[in-house]
Image (cartoon, rainbow, N blue to C red; front, side, top):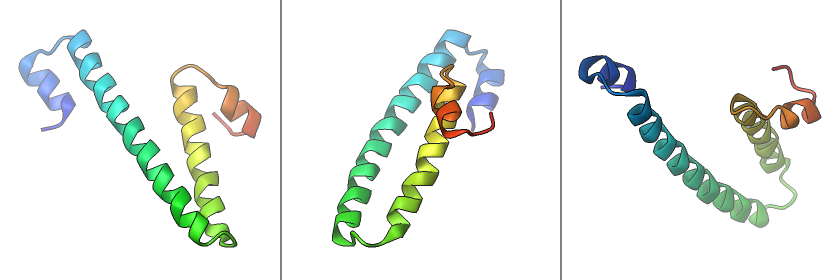
Length: 83
């Protein structure tokens, strides 16, 4: 059952929903940090492979959009991305 259905069925408060989603975001950020470290280790094994740099180009754009969604447009503006 997704969060939207749970909200409709249990009349969850906005504060409760926010708390759950905040915890989920914190978990995702920790998982991203771990994956980034693993990616870095793989890149170190193949330093001439441009694919790793390409991966991070896309990731950094996506993270810039996430940051903008939270109220800070500086990264999308700096990268010249449409938002």
